[in-house]
Image 1 (cartoon, rainbow, N blue to C red):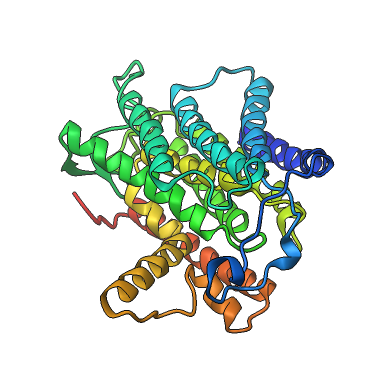
Image 2 (image 1 turned 90 degrees about the vertical axis):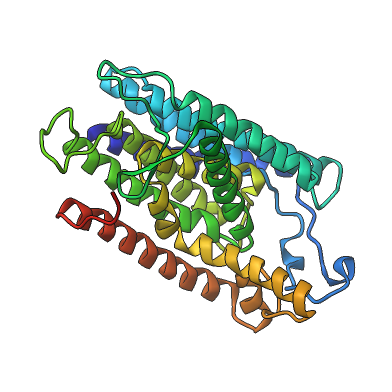
Length: 360
């Protein structure tokens, strides 16, 4: 528990005190993300002219805060890192690198669309597939590996995936989660605020799994998860880093986290879900991101099939902007929805411990 406290406190401090230094460095060099307006796109979009000149690539601070928070926690405990946590960090930093390339093109080459969609997807797929292969390796003394080929909900189910299908499943999870966070990162503070709630929930999940691990607790309801405490430390470090960054990203934002942050956060969430054996629980905990992503899918499908748009604009938060809702109102209400989703998801997790079985 002390490691978790150290990780979240360090990540928080890093986000709070390093972000303004990063802002100054970016501002001094004029590294700001371009903002598209109605004239550029040819149709009505929310007026974000006031955001022009705001520096981006703030995700560097989030990833850095999470890594420093995790490292300091282990230095404090005089313990080494686990293979499970390192794999999650690899997934997050690998996707952060893809996002950084996207942000670099937006800022330095002044191309607001960043990386081409195919290039970004290939980069995400490459990182995800390497993670998928490695997560089945590194067994502990009991033969438990960080990941399995069983589909999981609140723990592993009886659904076993052949290796090729398993690779596709992990690729889908990683790409879907990272892109969902990326799509949701459209208003000041929206994505990091919602993400911090999910990371806090996963911190609680990891602590509960550790306290009731099959290594420590011989019972039918115990959890066969490798390194659950270290997953809680990773989650706590990301939660702290997100909250620290949020101090500077809340409206009016002094910095955007960019694709560097959104893809990294999505990768971390997917990695933690996969290694904590809670893959199908993630869409519930991250219900807000699912809703926002579905709004894009529904909008595109409706326009292509009927020629009509269901929303004034997608993603969903921009629809409410065009309806005249203040940005802060949208963000706070969406945070409330995220809190309800994470609360409901953790309630399902706890109900399983009490004896409710959903699969297998």
